[in-house]
Amino acid sequence: MRPPKITPEQVAALGPACLRVTIPNTYADDNGHMNMRWYLAIFDDAGDDLHQRVGLTPEFHRRNGSGTVDLEHHLHFLAETMPGDNVAVYARLVAQSDKRLHYLMFLVNETRGTLSSIFECMNAFLDRRSRKTAPFPPEIAAKIKAWVDEGNALPWPAPVCGAMRP
Image 1 (cartoon, helix red, strand yellow):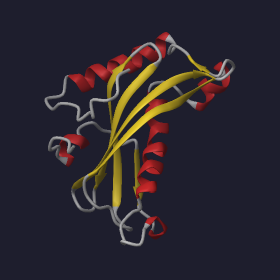
Image 2 (cartoon, rainbow, N blue to C red):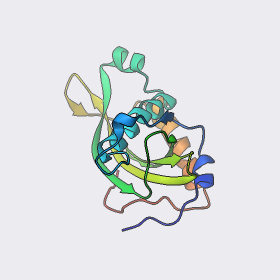
Image 3 (cartoon, rainbow, N blue to C red):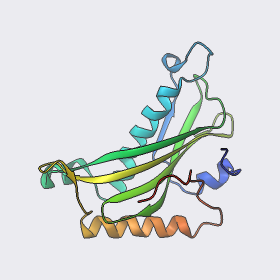
């Protein structure tokens, strides 16, 4: 299933980017484009910034014995990304529950002016002592809600796969 047409300009309006990177030659596969494993690595690296923006910093996690864990992913490949291309990752928070965060990340190929990939994720807050998911602290939940509300106010629908629910 292909997501609806979303322009790189619409995605860039989500800014600032969570990550910018130039694709190294070592990311190429036998077809000469970026191998699919590196998309997930880039989205994972960008997730660090997303979490920090809502207050889930490494210091917060050390102080509170907490963390986050991905529960489910969905990845759309829309256009090739090649070694040497400059890409940026932008985030849109879609929904939340007491313990879960549903979000999208968009990989924009700034060199080619295309939307290369969309990553959908269900993420949960983790109590590392009990090794179980736990409710987000109120101050974090409030920041997440504000970002979700911001995304819900956009004039274009979130291109979710429909299989994930917080």
